[in-house]
Image (tube, rainbow, N blue to C red; front, side, top):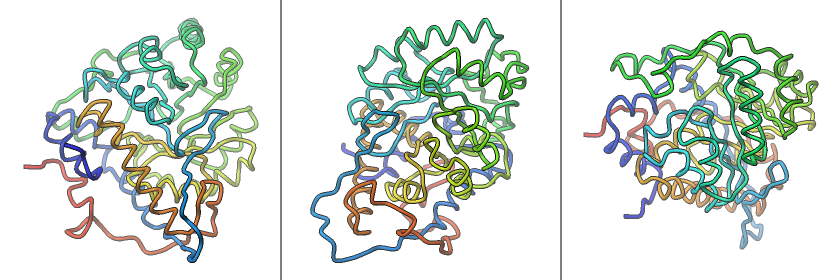
Length: 356
């Protein structure tokens, strides 16, 4: 069966996942306010379409760190991908390569960074959690460079692991939490640590988890190439802003001196258009990637990407733009969001927990 919508993929994933794995994928921290704000922030952005333009041909491609992407999208780093499919990160990487987007590989998923790199001949970024001392960092960066990763990403919003109550209530522990590491390593990371890692790596350098203009400006001062706007999908600090509400201040702060990526709440191709119009170079998907993996492995992820691109093409054509570089703030405005999914919504089943 070929899935016709990403909601259908979500429903298939729900059928295949045990409750604990589902809770780990769809949940967030504490009251899940940050996660809901991520979606609400997208829903507050409305389009200002222009008409009577020739949109016979639509080009969704773009460039990211010198690499061509078929559309402005990355596969976000997700821990414990083996929870959703036994091929884990290798499946995501193959899907990214076949479709033409970049996979940002988590340091806390299977298979190894070398095996994931070997799964497909396509540029990848490696995302590193600091889970050891400086000698450990040196060893990890050496492996990343030896494997041939195109860039390095450090996640900076995990100084302390959050309370994610859905899996707590079912007593489910993801693979990454079954052998806890010394939390002091991540808690002690500072801008000085980032400078040392950046110099050691000598690769295009991303910081994931920037949530304010102030930190975005500091990142630029430290020579960061990519400022990644994220609240960890609402899975770390609860009661933060939605990432689309953070975007303007970050774009203003970097002043074009760094590339901006955004994740959190991306469900539609039209969401990609909104983020790019407001200054992001690309978005990243986490939950949708996990749902695709659970539904049908690499083919499921690839189909997620195909549907997002189809939606992006429709949005661009109906806005009167034919290429990604034409998107700008002139095509969006603020509007009242829909309060919640309902019977007329294509996402009526989300964020519900069970499909009977």
